[in-house]
Image (cartoon, rainbow, N blue to C red; front, side, top):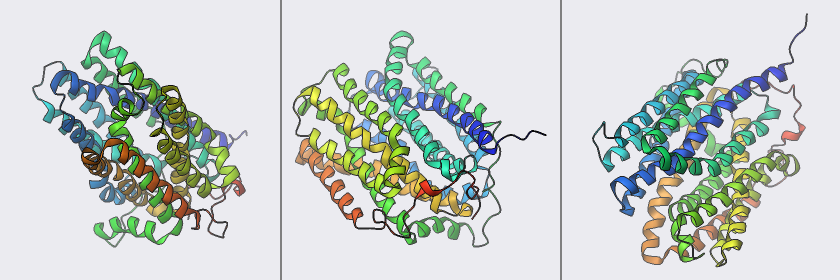
Length: 423
C-alpha cells in the first residue's frame, strides 16, 4: 500500500495556511491605507488623532498579549485563529457601515473599532506562530516563517496601491468590505487543517502562574532574552519611522506629494521582499543568532544613512536596503522562539514575546513623536537608529552571536528530526 510522504503532507497543509494568510495580509495592507485616509478625508486632519488610532490598534498586543498566552496553551489554536478571523471580518463590515452612513459615529468610533481589530489581530498572530510548528518539521521552520514574511512584504507594496484604486473607483465602504472578505477566506482555508497537539490541559499552577511562566521562560533562557531585547529595539525604531515617514520625506528628501511618498513605502517594501527571500539562506550560512543581529545592523544603519540623504533617488535606494534587514530580524526571532521553547508553553511564550516586542510600537510612537515635537523630527530619527546599532554591538558579545553549545544551528537538523510538539 502506498503511503504519502509525511514531508509532502506537511507541505500541503502549510500551503493551505499560507494561502489564507496571503489573502488576509492583502486585506491588512488595504486597510493600512484605507483607515487613516478615511479619517483624513471624511473626519479630521488633526495629527493627534492619527497617533491615537495607531496607539489604539497596537496597544492590545501589550494588554492582552500576556494573558492570552495561557489560553493558547489550553485552547485549540486553530479554533482561535478561525474565531479571530471572523471577528475581524465583522469589525470591517462595521467600518463599511460607518463609512456609508448606515451607522453613526465619528473618529471615536474608528478608534474603538481599531482597538477591537488590534485585539483580534494580537490573538490571531500569537496563535498563528504557535501553530506553525504543528504543521512543519523543525528543519522547515525557517523556510515557513520566511515564506509568511515574503508574502507580508509583497502586499506591503501592493495593498496600499490597491486600496487607493478601490477607494477612487468605488469609495470607502467597498474597500472595507473587501478587507472583511479576506478574513472570511482565511477562516475557510483553516478548516481543513488538523488541530495542533500542543493544546491540552490547564497547568495545575493556575491562571496567574501560567501567564507569568511565559515571561519567566523568556528571561531565564539566554537566547530568548537577548533576541527579545533586540526585537524590542528594532520595533522601537520601526514605530517612529512609520509615524513620521511623511514628515521625513518632506524635510529630508524634499518630497511632499502623495505619489512621491508612496514610492518611499514601495522601496521599503521591495527591500523587505528581497530580505525575506534570502532569510533562509542567511540562517544556513550565518546561523539564526548572527542573521538576527546582522538584520538589526542593516535596518538601523539604513535609517541612519537615510536621515543624511537629501537626494530622492538615493533615499529610495537606502530605504530599500534598510527594509532588506527587517525580515532577517523577524524570521530569525520567530524561528529561535519556536525551536527553543517546549511545546507545552509555546502559546504563552509566543504571547509574552509578542506583548513585549509589539509593545515597542505604541510606546515608541507616543514617546518619540512627543520628543520630536520639541527636539525636531530629524534629530530623533538620527538618535534612535544609533541606539539600535549600539544594541546590536552589545548582542555581538552574547551567546546569540558567539559560537557555543547554546547557539542554534538549524542546518544540522534533518527532515525527520524531532517532531514538532515533542519536548
